[in-house]
Structure formats: C-alpha cells, structure tokens
Length: 326
View 1 (cartoon, one colour):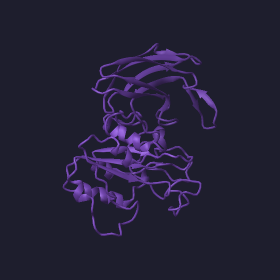
View 2 (cartoon, helix red, strand yellow):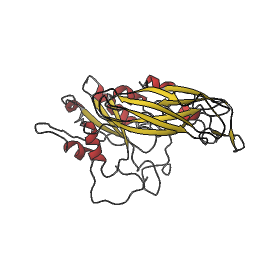
View 3 (cartoon, one colour):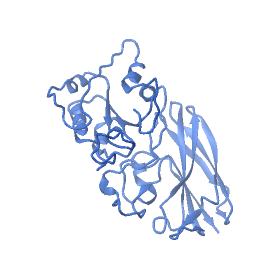
View 4 (cartoon, one colour):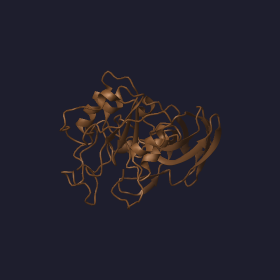
C-alpha cells in the first residue's frame, strides 16, 4: 500500500476493506489468500480457484511491493539491493491468473501494485480489466472501492511507458536516448505514455490554430472543443505534443508540451485554449545549446502519446495541426 517515502499514519485502508465498505446489503464478498508474492505455495491445497468460479466478479491483487524494489533499507526481499533484475511479473502470479481464467468466463479485474513498469503481456490477455494502482497510500483501499463500484470515474494517465519486454530497452550502459521513452522509441510498447481508460468516452472537434505560421520568439494560440460523448460524468486529460523539424532523426518524434484536465457531464462540451510558447518550440543541439529551427511543426492533440500503439488500444481522438516557423 505504501511506497518507500512515507510517514506513519493511525489509519490505513486496505484493498479488502475498501471493497467491503462498498457492498450493498445482500451482497457478499469472499476473500482468500491465493498465492505467495513470489515462489510456489507450500500448502498444496487450492482453496481459491474453485470458489472464484462461483463469483459474479473476481478481483485479483497482484504485483510487487517495496520489499522487492526501492531504497532506504525496506527492500529486504531484494537480492539486488532494491533494484529489479527484470521487469516481469513473478511467474507464480502469472500462473495463478491462468488458473483463475481456466474454464472461467466470469469478469476478472486485476489490481496491480508497483512503483515501476511491469511487463505483463499475459495479464493483458487474461484479464478483463487492469487497474494499476502503484503504491496508493493510506486511502488506497477506499480509492479502489470508489473506482470499482463506479462512484469515481478513473482518469489517471501513465506517466511512463510500459514496454512489452525488457528486450525493448537499450543497454543500461548506453546513455544515448535512442529507444528510450515515447520520445525516441520506435517499437510498439505494451502501454504507451499518457494512456488510461475511462468509464465514458470523449471526442475532440473544432480544433484550429490562430495562424498557419509564426515568427521566431512569438507564441501561437490554438483552441479545441472537447465533448463527453458517453453516459457518465468524467475527466479527460487532453495532451498536447509538439513534433519539430528533424523529428525521428536529429530529434525526438514528439514531446509533451502541456496538458489540460477537463471535467464534463454526459453530452457537455467545453472549448479549451492552449498556447504554444516560444520556449516549447526550442530544440537542444548535440552540444546542449538551445536553438530554434525554422520549418514545419506539428501540434498533436491526443488522449495518449501519439504512437501507433495508442491507436491500437482505442485512442481515436488524435488531431494533428501543422504550422510553419519562419
């Protein structure tokens, strides 16, 4: 529940407590420990997978803990001084999820804990929903209950890229940016930077720049309308990326230059304004000096990083606006 840097609290809401607190009269919650965090169970009797098939929905908490990763002496279960030798979910956890899914068509919601990316392609295939909760803190259980029972519409977005495997990452000794982060990665990740789901849907429309060109040192304004096209209130995180001359060769494919969070009721829309500052149009050369490149720029407005994988995952509200810097 808690990460490495935290104080002490007199109150802590666990995931189980958060779920039980949301149950209506007549509903029932069964809880059983399923597996060890890592390694096989010593007790050969399986009390969980059979009972799970009788449930209307199954919530499985998987992931890693600060005992396996982190700093300040808490990672006592780590043989690598708090570092992770790989990004995989422990094999016993994946196997347990497979057992739960075997001959079982009931919805499986995986609640995943951790403080760093986890490669989990099998979890993606086996689970009906994944909620990556990081180390959610003392109110994490109540927050989980709010989201699972629909009292809160999730609006979180990934602040990092989740690769499909560690093979997609360059050697640690290589300090170049090639293949690192959404800005330079050419391969398709498992989950891209900025990605996240909602219980509702949003549409972007009426996007326009105030001008098709701009001079050096000038800012450029734009506006876009965001509409809640679903049937639930929700918050959308509108992301603004800028692609500059030389993108993908002498510079990043695109860079996040701003976000706007907007809360909308079903059917409601709002006109957002955004300004591309002169600093956002600045590039850094190989010597670390700032420069302003003349040429064609593209402002990309999207609900996740503007990569192919985002579209594959259903992010279909991307809009590209081109302008020239003279």
